[in-house]
Amino acid sequence: MLNVCVEFGNKWDIAFNPAKAQCVTFGGNSPKQFTLAIGAEHLSWCTRLKYLRCIFWYGSCEIDISPSVGKFCAEFNNTMAVLGKYSNEMAAVHVKYGH
Image (cartoon, rainbow, N blue to C red; front, side):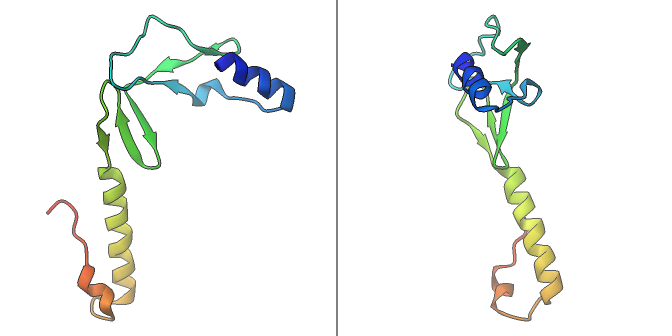
């Protein structure tokens, strides 16, 4: 499948960057004995995948959303600090993460 992507990229002048690509498996052990490559560059195996601020762990279907929740809470609290704590109905949904 990677070879198909490389061929497509060559045909349509799309460059895939192997330095920004990694391999991960879900629901089983990482088959590290397999070597995958984009062109002549080998891809590395990793133990987690970050996608849309969520972290997916290899070998399972567990997802860590705490970075996303923490970022949301920080941004929400910053917004509330600018608006004023009791300036409107938004104060009723003030968020504290981790408590």
